[in-house]
Length: 242
Image (cartoon, rainbow, N blue to C red; front, top):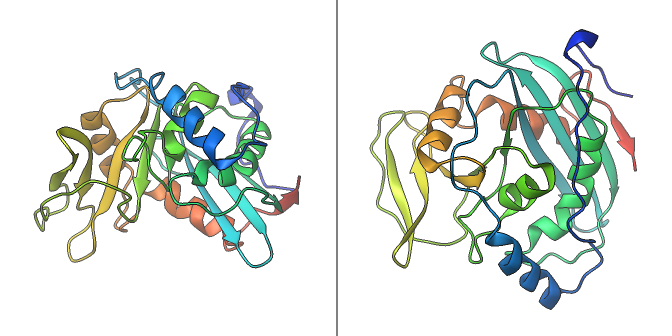
């Protein structure tokens, strides 16, 4: 069971598209990434979000199990209105660049349990800042048909200068001749985060919304709370098996 703190008048159904199956090999997974990357929208389709979700997943590589969490916050209050946490086995091997095939099934299972459809979703992972331009935030943005942002703690590809020390300062993340993201300083004195377009949003807006969701921590509040939920440390968010 999970705790849901929201009036029924806000309830909306979270729809999940079925673009492909998840029982694929690594070669087919890479081909799917290349095919789907062309469908990612880098244009803003977000105006005034009422609900913003954060997503994170915790994987036990030894046991082959994982916990996926989606936490929905009201905006601008940034208060929790719903949390869904699911646990289960992971079948896809750990392959850098293919983590969405390992993590997406449980994450989507958590989304399917939501009673509130978020207007914007922040992922603890990459968007187009990915060798084939389809990290978790972009991949699931297509499945969820919702504006998404990748906000990762580390770099997967590309190069960059060191951003300024002030919160809000950023440096472009570049791969070849393409800007694929921004290295954003969210808090003075801590490492920056790697922000990239997920789906249906521009990089400028992605930077804006990550900063708007920061509450004095390195990570924006939606993904910070999702991280706690995935680790079993968010009060009221209980894991259910799938």
